[in-house]
Image 1 (spheres, rainbow, N blue to C red):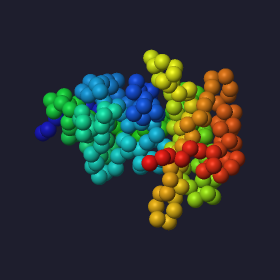
Image 2: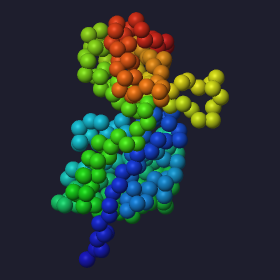
Image 3: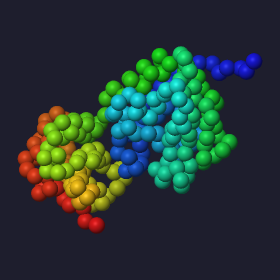
Length: 239
């Protein structure tokens, strides 16, 4: 009889990455029985970011079904093709979630052990992490509130456009002030014609502050964007 692994506990921890330019949102790092898996076997890797946890439950990076699927647990900012990634196959079997068939393309000998989780604990932890806002800095909260307001407004569709990105922009540590932009929110949208994307636009001057309430700042930024045809007030991307 094959020995079966003991039940493990999954914990998901939000972390603002050091190299936030690769993805401005927090990572959602998996800890198995308290051990940070990525730090243990692929220290350069970043976990999938918080922006991937905003859709339906089945779209979350660690969601499982009875059908096995291979999941990228983490990769470095330079991408998996450059410095390797950590993969695992995950599935649900009855009251268990199973992670096995690990692959570490950066170091074939550094692999976690196969893991079994109680499905109720596992799914509760996914739901908790998706709802968790405690990690947010003010700029994250403003970006989240602004994105929701813009998405709900239908404003861009009125102008034949599609909102493509709303994300925080952090101040870069240890950089001379003349080479950095103030903390703020980046917003991008595409103008779309029947033949496809015609142009891309950005706002680079949506700055935030620590002095005003985040809700007020989100409202002010939204009012500015929604005041006129966005193609007149945003900066067109030049090719």
